[in-house]
Structure formats: structure tokens, C-alpha cells
Length: 241
Image (cartoon, rainbow, N blue to C red):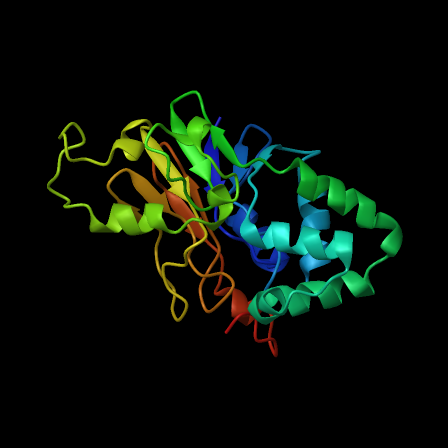
């Protein structure tokens, strides 16, 4: 079984279909999605529908992203958050308003079922954004940090690459896990980039909401696959650019 970790989709179901084909995904694979399934391109509703169907065919783990929570809040309250609308939410709102309202409940169940993090049997941690507690994710005070925090990636980038994992100055919160896989903070918004590794943290958000690609990585071998730049699959749309 391969474990394939997949970065922020941001409503780009066309890119996701292309990516799964390029990675030659089969029923033995475990697909781990890092969150942010909506907000950017016009096919938000279709993307979530695709993910719900995907889980009937494959072993899937769906992590909660901040954009997923923002969308869920709107669906439940119908209160429009200007910040959400300005950062891809308008396209998601319009997509859902075009959809059959009878199936909204099924999507709300999907959003409610998302996991804040996933820890596999090899002590690899998967979450959307980060965590701050020095003792690890089980001790985090505020669940929102799992899908909003940006300090973990900032910390990983600031670590001296010559600092050994066993060194006393290596950050304590990272020592609990063999590796950590995150999305949330795009590596680039303006060009095609590769997933990045800093310390024992991998960032898989290669800017699918902007001018980048959608990425999947085999967590064992670090082989990865990418879609075409997602904006090329949605001609005439701005996404979050």
C-alpha cells in the first residue's frame, strides 16, 4: 500500500482528476488529503461531490482546512464573511447556489467528519496548518490552530539545516514525529514549484489556488506527481490571483 499525501485542492477537481490519473492511483493506496477542498475555482460543489464518491472506492483520510470551516460556517448560517468572500469564498458560494439544495446536508456531513490531524503507524503526522504545543498535537489548547497556524512552517524554515534532530536546540514540538506533512501556506503563488522539505516538515501546498499545480507525494519514497497549473484548467477564471 502506498500512502499518498495530497495538497490543498481549492475546488480544482479537474486538477485532482488529472493528478490521480498521473499517480496511477489504485485501490491499494491510502489517500491522505491535507484540507482546503474549496475556495478558488468554480467547481467547489463538484469537488466535494467527487471526494465523497472517492471515499467509496479508496481508503481516504480527509483533514480539515480553514477554508472548509469557513465554507461550513456560511452553509450553516448563510452569513457572508467578507474576508472569506475575498479569498476564494465568492466562487464557492456561487457554486453551491447553483447546486441542488437537497444535497447540501450530505456536504455538511462531509465537512463535519473532517479530522484535525492524522498520525499514521510510522509516526508521521498529517495536518493542514500546524500546532503550537511543545508536547504535541494531543495537548494543543485550541483546535483552530490545526487549520490556521502558520508558525510551524515558519519555524521549520528558520531551523539551521546543520542542526541535528537529536540536538537540544532542535524544536521540541517537532521531535515527537518522524515527519510532519502540511499544506495551508503556499510555497509560491506565482509559479510552478516543487513540494518543499525543511527540518522534518514537508509542505505540499504548491499553490493550486493561484498559479501553481496540485501535488501528490508518496510519503515513503518522496516520489511526487503534479497536475498542470490549475489556472490553465479553468480558462477565464481568476481563482485567488
